[in-house]
Image (cartoon, rainbow, N blue to C red; front, side):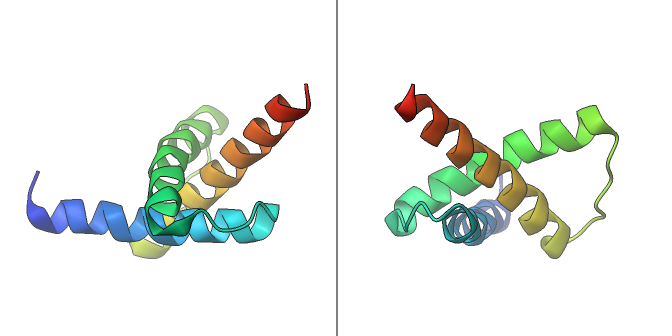
Amino acid sequence: MSSHSLLAWLIIGAIAGWLAGTFVKGGGFGLLGDIVVGIIGAFIGGWLAGVLGIHVGSGWISSIITAAVGAARLLLLLRAGRRA
């Protein structure tokens, strides 16, 4: 993995985690927390898009959208697990 791709993962993860925290109203998790939530969300969003047969596109914007949707789903699942 090159340093450019690692930087891209970190930037996309931070933006997606922040967006998901904003939409789900879970509050901010700080930069590191947002990156972790965003990267895990990217895996979840990519998996969901594949299962549902959805293709958002290619590039930074579509990666951020996919990761943010997955991260929001992750936050909703975590919130539901805390209530149970």
